[in-house]
Image (cartoon, rainbow, N blue to C red; front, side, top):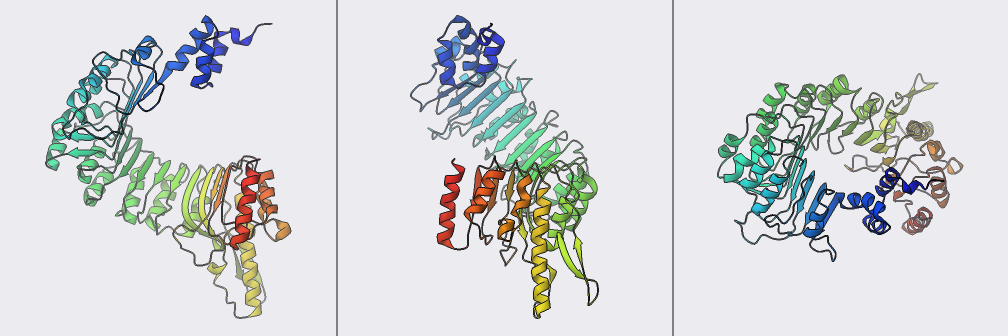
Length: 510
C-alpha cells in the first residue's frame, strides 16, 4: 500500500496547513520532505527586530528562490546587496521606531532591492516608517509594471518627491493612502504634479490625509475614472461640495460598484446624485450623511436588485419604513447595518369599524442571503398610537406588542444563512427599550422560531430590557451549534444578569 506522504503533491497540500514550527520539523525528516516543505516554509518570510529568533539575511538569500512574500518589521536596516530575492511578489515594511531626524530618508538599498525585483513585485506596503520616502524609491516602484497594490500608512511625502510619488501611484491597480502627511507649500504644486489619469487604478482608499486638501483628493478621484471601489474619508478641512457635485454629475465612474464615503456634509440630494451616477452599486456606506427620501428612491430604483452590503447606521434621517423597504426589496443583500425598525412596519392592528379590527402585515423580507444584520427592533407598540385610557385600548395595545414580537421573529426565522445579529439602539432613537424578547414560548416568548438560524455565530443585544433564564442559554447552545459570541444585558436585575453571564461563559466554553 502506498504511503500518501510519499507523494510530493500530497505533502505539498498538507504543508499548506502547517505552521512554521511543524514545517521546520518536517524538513528534518529526509531529503524528499526537505525539498517539499522548504519552499513552503520560506514562501512568506518575516524578520522582526524584537523577536529572539529570526531568519538571517544569509538564510533568506540561501532560500531566495522560495521567498515570495517578505515582511520586515521594526527598524530593519537594508544595506546594498544584503538581500537578493529575485522572485519576490510582496514586500511589506513596518517600522514603529521614532525618526532620528526630520530630514532622514529611506536607505537607497530599498530602492535597489525593489529595482532588482521589478519583474515580479506585485504588492508594496510601507507603514509607519520614521524616515521620509525618497524619489529613488518611487522611481523604482514606477518601473514595476506588474504592480497591483501600493499601501502607504502613516508616512511622509516631501514636496520635492511629489512627481515621482504620483508616477509610482499611477502604475498600480490598488492604492491606499492612510493617515499620510504631505509636506506642501501650497495646493498648486500637488495638482501640477498629478498625472493626467490613473488608468490602471481600480481600488482607491484615501483616509485622514494631512497636507493634501480635499479638493486635491477629489481631483485624484476624478482622474481615476476606472475605479471599481472607492473608500474616502476626507480630512477636517472644508469640503468642495460644488466640485463634488460637478464630478458626480459627469457620470464618469461607470465601473464603480463599491463606495464608502464618510462625509457628514453630504445632503440627501448629494447622496441621490451619487447613487444615480453609479451603474451598479453592490457595496455602500455613507457615514453621517443626510441619506433620506431622495437617496432612498435612487437606491431602490437603481440598485435594489444588486446591492449586497449597505451601511447607514449613523445616517440620522433613515426611517423605519425605509429599512423595511430595503429588507423587503433587496434580494441580494448580505450585510445590512442600519439604526432602527419599528414593529408597526412589520405588523399593525388597524380598526375596520367600531366593532372589528384587521391585522396589516408588512411585506415579507426577500433578503434571504443575509449574513449580517445590525438593526434595533423597536417593539414597544408605541408606533401604533393606540389610546390606552380604556381597558379595550390597553388590551389592543398588548395585542399590538405581541403581534410585533411574533412577526419580528417570523421574519428573522427566514434568514437561514444569518451569521451575525446585532440589535441595540445606538442612536437612542427609542425612549422605551422594548426589543426582541429572547424568551422561549414556554415562558411567553417567540425565541423558538429562530431554530432555523443554524449558521448563527454572533448575537449582541445591549440595553434591551431582557428577562432571560438559563433555559434560553441552553436552547441557544443546542440550536445554534456555531454560536461563539453571545453578549448583551441578559436580565434587568444586575445580580441575575451577572449569574446569567457566568452561566453563558461556562456553556459556550464546553
